[in-house]
Length: 198
Image 1 (cartoon, rainbow, N blue to C red):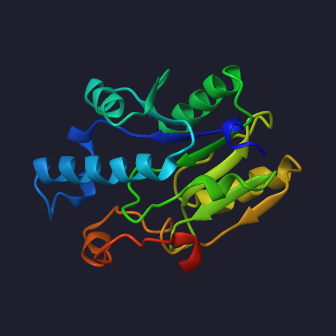
Image 2 (image 1 turned 90 degrees about the vertical axis):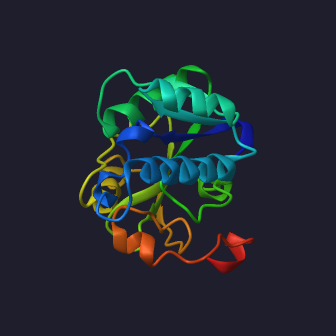
Image 3 (image 1 turned 60 degrees about the horizontal axis):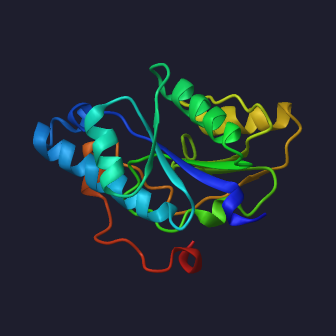
């Protein structure tokens, strides 16, 4: 599939409200700076594909524009609705496939490989429970199930719709930051060649 047929979507909520589960370890300004830094790394990982930030906050939209990402405004609150809306917008703009990546992946590099498969690709978190990155064909009317156990729910959704499915564990894209332990255990630096080290 041609790379121009694929776009990356990164849902990002207001940096001021980000990562509240880290409040025991980081102050509000530190959490905002961490969230912004991680999201910037995910935007960079989306290149050279067209990359869009799905958001409903002015500070995030301004930031997205400053790092060269497009902005898709949320039609309704909630992660599943935000991603579904972004996919509808991209489909209307002529894209055939979307890579959805969370903005809290501090080790993310090169997302393009996730879309080199015709069906659905799921990259779960390192516990195998959440869905950190996923690629879906935009004509599949795929229903998103982010939340607890989303990796299994998304596998089930692909199977129900008869879509080819692959689940790819990736030790870099699988690392997200939700808790102080995630932050404390974070490796010191992002890999330079993630495909070779997967």
